[in-house]
Length: 392
Image (cartoon, rainbow, N blue to C red; front, side, top):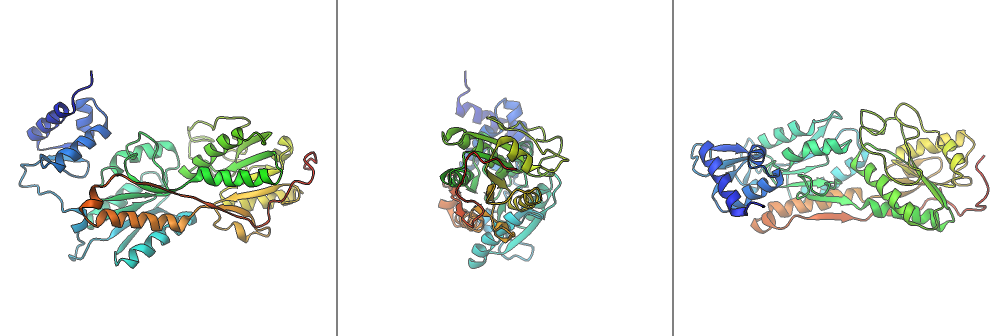
């Protein structure tokens, strides 16, 4: 039988009262319930003034020697000025840099100081940067974790959910039931973006389509899953497959970094880690006339290789890129799905300012905002002239 909520909370108060301060994770283990459940209980008890909530810690309300931290909106920097908003993004990530600039424009307009932190590519680098920002008086956090695999996301869940200041995830959608499920987030609707790409190719008469995609980010995994679902569900699509777009486009530890392959017809890891994808060979084998390529830097390189292999774009193969950072700059400007990168940053900053703006914003329901990508048509895809003409 499930333990009554009030009884469980009384047990939490008893443990915290006896020890003074207890980690939320330790409480969860001791009470044999999930961390999410204990975190929710601690938040309610703190709101009622029966204990105090710190950075992943529940503290007794009677500990006078350990005063509660200042509310996020009142946190200050070392010189006593209003604390900054910490903005954490991965290094060498041009896609998210556009998101960064969108967020900064909103914060600048409101006179809010930004403390930018660039996270190196190694795993676990975001946490010390966030802790450094909090120590410097940051009153809010905008973050786009790298999360090269689902396991990275899981390992970040507990600490990131308990940073102690309003936090908004940018271009990241936490998995349902994860520790971050109840965190504010602003993200592109990548399912819709893939729909735009497939629908465009289908409307031009293409019935055999390949997705060449990365597998080393939440966006890449969303795109792969969406393509499998959409292609399998479109009766016009006669054949489809998913291959890896670049040899460095996977987490460490194998072609998929320990993650399962996408389910569905013709899905594979061809062109896996250590080997450049021979897209021309895949197109010939599948008799495919259309391709969706993610990300667009990889797309430009793949189109170059197609040309070297005698496959013309769009005459022999119609191409739609996904990301649209540099897709329009190639010798053949690529039609591309363009996620609203800067708008994601602006919407995330506006949501964070709402959280920092007063008691109503600070306690309102969690918000999960999705913005729709758009298709930029540039001519790398054309109507299929002969559905039976093979690529040679």
